[in-house]
Amino acid sequence: MKKLWLFLSVSITVLMLNACTLGVNSSEDSITIFSERHYDTDQMLFDLFTEQTGIEVNVIDGNADQLINRLENEGEDTSADVLIIADAGRLHRAKSRDLLQPVESDTLFNNIPSNYRDADNYWFGLTKRARVLVYHPDRVDASELSTYEALTDTQFEGRIVTRTSTNIYNQSLMASFIEIMGEEAAKNFATGLVNNFARTPSGNDRDQAKAVVQGIADIAIMNTYYIGRMMNSSDSFEQEVADTVEVFFPNQETTGTHVNISAAGVTKHASNLEGAIQFIEFLSGEEAQSSFANANFEYPVNEAVEVHELLSSWGEFKAQDINLSVLGENSYQATIIMDEVGWE
Ligand SMILES: [Fe+2]
Image (tube, rainbow, N blue to C red; front, side):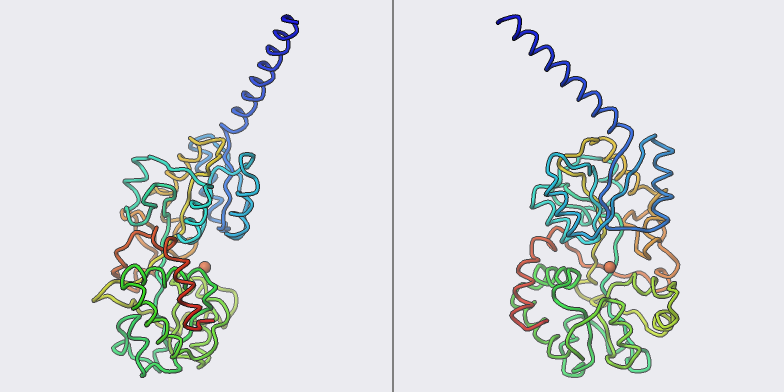
């Protein structure tokens, strides 16, 4: 009986060792990323990373909710080492569902300003965008514009468009206001804004700029990078829209313009932890940052890196001075307020 036990336990140990060795070998020279991004230039960057480190990069793309749900369903068996998502609110969702792990990295701490990474180091911003006012210069003079809050004035009645409240960009915008001005003032803003809508919210950010050019509205609230994307679109109307509208950064004399980020986190069950950290460090570095940001006409988070010429043509701007973790923390309250004021 003792001999059988010994035989069994030795066999099991050998099997386990084999499994471990296999696991280590297969994961040490590759990483898998779940990514919401899909730009051709990203692949060139990943190839460069492979060239420098010998680590292959497998990319599985999908939208944020699909990727987060998949990560949750796969649990310990997930192939994902890194999650890349285009909104701080959703990264927070992944963190609060226990799908990410904290990372201590001086490289990341040095490359990324502290307000653009999670307060507990679960995710790290890589590129940022501003949520600005886009207006038609024939119908609006820049001198009429000042702050988000001023859009609630009666002079803007029936002149403003933005997308629905189900969209995370607007939820994050409201979450930032809850942080900066408090719930009551944020609710007053939302009430006043809804009163001044030119139409019931519909469409994506590009559709808001289109509505401005079509004369449906005079001012749209939308993300900066869509201007760059429409400028380089194969659709001639989108090009016309991008050429026609002007960009205004609100709250420059007060609390700053709302910014949001694309960010990456290491998954809780990453099989190649070191490779995953190295990969995010690489993306935050000077070599990768301009290509990674320019692919989507965004601002690099690494302040040592120059911004795209289209973005620099709009001039520098002051951003809200908040840690973007709050966008996730306040997002539920934001949706409640938007619902209460009838922001569809
Ligand atoms: Fe977007």
